[in-house]
Amino acid sequence: MIYSDHASQFGLDPDIVNQRRELLSKALNGRGLDTHEIVEATTIAETLGIQFVGDPPTVCATPARRWKMHRVLSALLRGRRVSGRDLEMIVDHLTLLFLLCRPLLSCLNHVYDFMAACYTQKRRLWKSVLHELRIARGLLIFARRDLDRPWHPSALMVDASLSGYS
Image 1 (cartoon, rainbow, N blue to C red):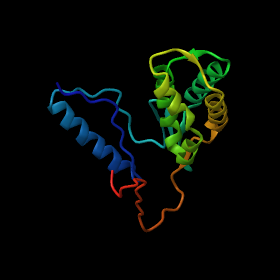
Image 2 (image 1 turned 90 degrees about the vertical axis):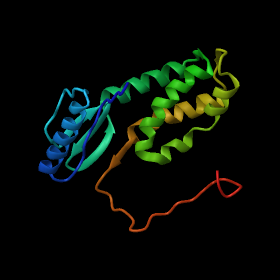
Image 3 (image 1 turned 180 degrees about the vertical axis):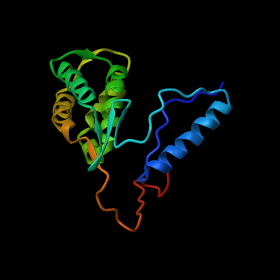
Image 4 (image 1 turned 180 degrees about the horizontal axis):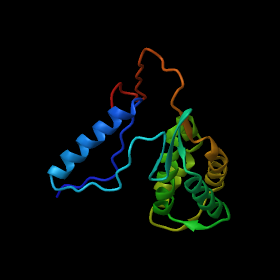
């Protein structure tokens, strides 16, 4: 079974974006995958709780998604007992938001240790985890990307593996 969901096209020329969207829709429809909720090229769009604004070009969480994450983190900070599996689902959503501004991910460390140590048992969060989640909640507003920032002409890749490859 073939499944496709949420296709978005981005570009600087609305005519080209619409043209590519039409080509993709025809290809999917030709394979029996009906497309729906088709939107013409626009400078403001929203999908999966992420907002795209065109002037200046910015990507960020929708206010509703950011507020929902704030409420979830606040509930955890009040001392709810959770399993590592429960925390993993929350951290997955938080990671998606923080990928918009990757340095924000650096506030998370002990959450991963907690998830591994308490994956199936509900426990009170460790103080170190509470501290990280409090910081993450405060950083939510910075989870955004300005798309018109300058790019460096050279790409750089590094590997953190001790053996030189992973």
